[in-house]
Length: 526
Image (tube, rainbow, N blue to C red; front, side):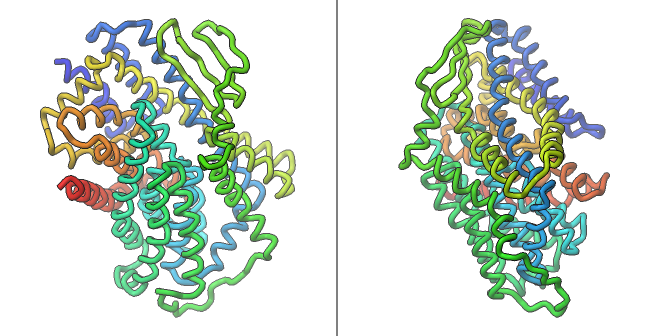
């Protein structure tokens, strides 16, 4: 009965978001959090004061992901209203007239880099319209961009799905690095299959084969630096991998390496001036530079931005509020419990680098007050529903984990462990994919299910790092079939009621992705 009650909220959540008339995430997740609270009170006799403290901490914790989302959207809107996005599109169109080159440079390498910098659906929002502008079919572009935007997602938005998604487990730095390394390995091997399947949705297999050398080189140009960076850092793999891959892929395309010549030579070669090109790539260059400089442990900036030396403190009713010298905000002893919350204002990638880059772009692009106002207005309009979804997810996770060994999360893990035992190795990634499918976010999937994955791994004797890597990989591959992402891309490209058609196509590469991840994990443990 306890296992059934523990599973009931999650099963209901899955049903609510996958039924014929599904509930949107911003309604389903808060509703599920309320249900978890009722189960805790009436079935697990939970401490209500502690439960309220965990709920408050969950609401406060939303500031971290939502501020990153806000920064990413604001930069995207600034680029749009300033006209820089149109110039970017014009430049990318001039690189090559080969269909494969265009699809790999824009749909793969460029989107890879954007995912590493901002995530949260931004890659498809930028890449898909550019590809449609090049003349590719709208529906096929939607399927391709959704499929391509999977490999880098584990390290998207400067590693948010890992460092924030797994933050509730209190893992050591060494463990996080090991998980990042394994995640990158599994994703890198899947990358030899997933992008190629994505291309098959737009061009023929014969054409893919004739350009296969370029395709493999473009894949490796992103995934090799991605994998090597992940050996020592879990914030930059996708960002650096995408940046290196974009530069190399453009160079390969310009030289025609591995590409067959197109019979149609009518391609528009309208080039940007050097000054225009510099202005177009400045925001992305600044993002990479600022992020790298502020994250390298060899430089002093990382410690400065994480300085928790108290500067001001006051009791605010729910707990002791404190601001540090690096503007780290914290609330301790929430409702007199040991629950606490912390937000690193200058280290979380929101004010630095996104808002900082925006402030530089406004005079750089000579933007008017009206353009800036419209960009800010668009950003706030897009934040409400994701904010509600994330609040629901974070509160639900906090409540599911309340009770230590007798928590619903731990009881559920025991049930899965007894049912599958060592075979959980083959199911772990699919749980992560399920989380992304119904929540629309790899970060939320990791927040929701990493506790279950950790507990199952310990119960059945599987390496925790491998299982959490599979969770991370699963959360990334679930992006292909995520309803939220499908609707977002469909809206951007201007068509509707094609969700079922898209899922039927994207589920194929997702299945291949999951089989590769499970197979490689099995080989690692042999």
